[in-house]
Image 1 (cartoon, rainbow over the protein chains, first blue to last red):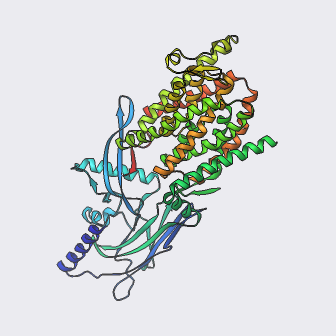
Image 2: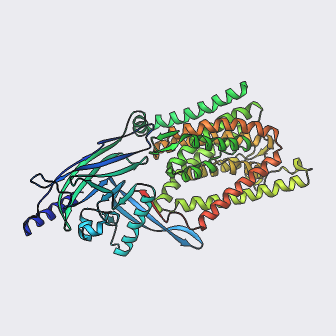
Image 3: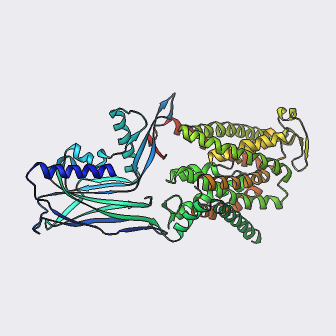
Amino acid sequence: MIRRCLLAALALVALTGARAPAPRPILVPDVSQHEVLLRQGFTGADLLLYGAIMTPEGHRAGRDYDIVVVLEGPTSPMVLREKSKVAGMWVNTDSTTLRSVPSFYAMASTRPISKIVDERTAAIYEMGLDSLQLSPGGGAVDPATQKRFSSGLADLMVRRGLYGQNEHGVTITDQVLYRARISLPSSVQTGTYTAETFAISQGRVLASAVSRVEVRKEGMEKAVADFSHRNAFAYGLLAVGLSVLMGWLAGRLFVRR
Amino acid sequence: MDVYLPIANLSVNGLVIVGLGMITGLLSGMFGVGGGFLTTPLLIFYGIPPTVAAASAATQVTGASVSGVIAHGKRGGVDYQMGGVLVAGGILGAGLGSALFNLLQKLGQIDTVINILYVVMLGSIGGLMAKESIQTMRGAAGEAAKRRHHPLVSTLPLRWRFYRSGLYISPLAPLLLGIFTGILTMLMGIGGGFVLVPAMLYILGMSAGVVVGTSLFQILFVTMATTMIHALTTHAVDVVLAALLLLGSVTGAQLGTLFAAKASPVKLRLALAVIVLGVAARMALGLTWHPDEIFTVTPL
């Protein structure tokens, strides 16, 4: 994260320093919901990432820029394993450690990413599933293997509804308002999600802005999750007690009949 | 009916889970097996994380066995002495299984080991049971005479009398059996009943009337221990999920016990054999078919 911000800052400095400054747009982003509460009845949420884009003078600037929005969940280290057929059976044979796997990733853009920026820029800003920075660790891994693993991970997560990209997902109305709809499945993890918006022109990121979305458990769900970690022994007893009680009650009810 | 599961971190259709519990409860009451060998794979298939599925299935099996033990106990169908020895072994085994689980998980081979265990255990036991019950059905006579413990059991030192089981054998035999099923419980998220019931019949040679009740008795306590171990180590017991499963399974277990009292034991055993073989075949196919997911991701 820090490395990425640094790179982004450097890129901006390089851009402004080297050439005649392209008009830097004003980006005013927001998210429809800054808090997503996981509790009974939560089956997922639709987030609207929207905002306004204007020239410094305050004119509508939607025609001049491409907009890319990225919503990313908290990252954590993961082990990714790959199965292959050994003696007629599918067995885990290869594995890799990835130190920063986002628990959620969604990108939306006005046009296909490959037409907006080059590969290097896409990698710096993590635009698109092909450009995720997963920080593979543990020894030198050759790029081909790395590629295979990261696209394997992306595939897996896309099917779980946790990763996604929509290369026509950003719509701009009246040349000033942009918006993109991103849906969170019910299996999202808790934590702070960052929603980043980029305004791009001629392959260069000219403005970016971040807003945050907090995903957390609430009410009984929070209580249960906290309880299971803070007081594991009592929680275990509760679970055992509950099952014995329910079993016993059912036994009583049926005998009476 | 959408229900959000606080530990599994996703929302599920509550009625589906209750129905699933019902099926396993029926099996539990009818055959004395925990039904975990069906619950865990089905929950995983439904999208519940594997550890949460195994841990919560264990909790559910506890509930299903309570009503079963009570029902069988009232009819004198539980050998508490034999059950006590099995429980002691089972809790030891659960501890061992937990260590083994961690080791295999580190190696990344836990899924394969579990699948192979399922295929080998279920396949051999299902085959044995099917063969035996078909033989008995053909020549209906002489069933009672055939009940004897395995020759190896009589070589063990120290002998106890187990009155209700009608046995005079070394307590080491049920203890070892208990340890073995304890390991399976922890590894596979199952009660171990499908191993226990045939082993009691064909290895220990217990009288058929107390087999189901005693097996449930052992399962009850071993799954309690397993739930506690999971709660303390993996934090993967989801009470909401367990409660939903319980709702279905405790009622299912009662119905199952009623059926079991009416049906003929040989037919019951054949039915169980068919189910067990079916699951084994499915697992074997799962090992050899191209899997849906080549990649799996686990937190470090």
